[in-house]
Length: 291
Image (cartoon, rainbow, N blue to C red):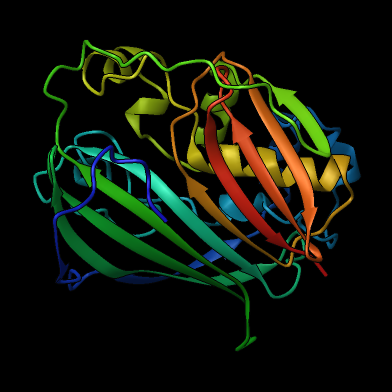
C-alpha cells in the first residue's frame, strides 16, 4: 500500500523500530462520542443507545491520539496511539490501511487497546529520502482475550517540497462509471469535526496556509480516515453492506470543498469501492469482504 510518489524507490532497507513503539491503554466506547460521530455525518443521534452495536468504521474514535503537544511532529501529526518518528522528513501522508472486524463493539463497552509501530522501512527516490512506517492497533473487550478488531496503517514520511508554491495541473479524466455512484463534498466543518473526534492535529487538514504554502497542496487535504469513513458509510447506508474486512490504498489526495465521487461494484462475493477527485482522477481504492 503506497501513496503515489511519482518515482520508484531506488533503495530500501529495514529500519529500527523505536523502543517506545508499543503502548497499551484503556478506551471506552463512549455514547456521547458515538452520538457526535452521527451528528458529524448528519444522522439522527437519538437512535444510538447504550448496548447497541457501534457501526463498523466508527471505531476511529477509539484510536485517537493522546500525544502531548510538545511531542507532536512539526506538521502537527500526533501518531494516533504512538508518537510518529520524524527522521528529518517533515511531510506525512497516509498510504493505506487494513481493518479486520472480528465482532461488533457494543456502545458503552470498555476496551483494551494496543498500538505499536511494527515496521520502519527507509527508501530513496528521485525526490530524496523517505520512510514507510506501519502502525498496528488491536482492540479487545475488557477481560476478553480475543481481539474484536485489528487495524494496520501505513504512513509515508516525505522530504520537504522544493517549491511548495507550484502545484501540478491534473488533466480531467473520463466520466466515472460503476454499478453504484454517490457524490459528496467535504467542507471545512466536516474536516474539523473529524479531526477533533480523532484528536488529530495534522496541519494539512486544519491550517489552509500550511497546506498551501508549506506542503504545496491547493487546499486543505481530506483526512485519509475520513475518506475511508465516507466509503464505509456508503456501504452501510446506501448498499446495506456490513464489512468483514477492508483494505484501502490511497493513491492521490482529496481536497476540501471539492466534490468526491464514490463508486461501488460487487466483485467475487465482496465489493470494490473507489473514490475519485473533482477531475475524475482515482484517489482511493478499497477492497471489501462481506459476510
